[in-house]
Image (tube, rainbow, N blue to C red):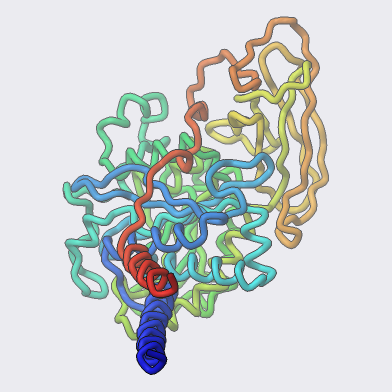
Amino acid sequence: MNRRTDRQRTGCTAVMSSLLLLLLFLLTSASTLEFRYHNNSEIKQYLVQVNTSNPDITHLYSIGRSVRGQELWVLVLGLSPRRHTVGIPEFKYVANMHGNEVLGRVLMLHLIDDLVRGFRNNETESVQLLTNTRIHILPTMNPDGFDESDTDCQYSTGRFNHNGIDLNRNFPDAFAGLRRKQQINEEEREAEVRAVIGWLKTESFVLSANLHGGALVASYPYDNSNGGSENVGGASISPDDDVFIHLAKTYSSNHATMHLGDRCKDSRPFLNGITNGYEWYPLIGGMQDYNYVWSQCLELTLEVSCCKFPPVSQLPALWTENRKSLLAYIQQVHLGVKGRVFDGSGVPVQNAVVEVKGRENMCPFRTDRHGEYYRLLLPGSYSFTVTYPGHEVLTETLTIPYGPDQYSAMKHDFLLRQITTTTTRSPANVTVASTTLSCNESFEVESAGVGTRSTWVGVGVGLGLVAAALQSLID
């Protein structure tokens, strides 16, 4: 009897050891991100896995579907990943807008891996970024194009979406006479573009970049011009040109080779590895101009590889070359000043106009549904003018320090004085201006990250079966 019991125990121990080894293998496989091109299903599975393993600092949601019905998945990283926190700026990266420009997909997955690992290992940079920023990552904006692409460096198919449309020529364009008609034309846009436009209405993004391939340069607005006062020396200059140049140089100077400006044999040289978009070549309907003009989100176009579809063997080196730049660029969301605008009753107000003297934006920057404003500005003194219906115009001069080193822009609230007794209160206790907006849309929709679905698949099922087997042996 004792010998049989001993043999049973020995057999049970052997089985448990085997199952534990299997569990360890699955956990190791699940946590090891390979340097290769993951297909769209594998990207979804990886994002689900990261979200399920790290629900306290990540959230997974979809902003819509491609023409062929593939979900456009976004992973959020931050201490409050499911919803916006007042005072915490919203940042985003978008990759694979052109389906055959694929390095961005790889960089985004490894950036997610790097940030999560760094946070879990209590590394200062990752902890500070996730504590003070809400980071949204869309690894592929054009999954259909990726499915149709081949691996040629420069001339591969797959650039366009399934309808044969270049998504970076499909956004409303302020210089093309669409400024007053963007709402009418939205439904005529491609599915992927409509998804991004809707996304910009649900989140008050402050800083963004979209990743491309085929060159090595950081390009900044404007991409287009109508030959007006913005056209200076062949470039199309925005009111925030100094900030855009700083942002572009931040990425370029932290990159291993981009700052050298002449690394791609098939491309023109770029001084310091940066360029004004229009000066490089005019572009109608681009995403970065739309972000800036209509959504008060400063966005760059980052060309991150000379080859649009780099060989797999080069991926580890390309990640190393871009890693520091990707992290440093996120940190720049903390430039300038941030705060809220309060009415005469002490209630935060939506759609108050917050203008900076000398920076006449096509669409004035306005407070969001939380009464917040964010202005990315270099260190210096600036005169601010705040206007809101029924209140006195407020003008204040602020001296702004450099915020990124502290992972926080300077905080300053504007307190308005009421000149009438008539105000309108929203259900959320935020006063909303009654004026009709001709530029920025009101941010009325709840955060895209709230209440959206995600499904635990693949690895989770396997781990659950192993755990159940182990539990049965223990019992």
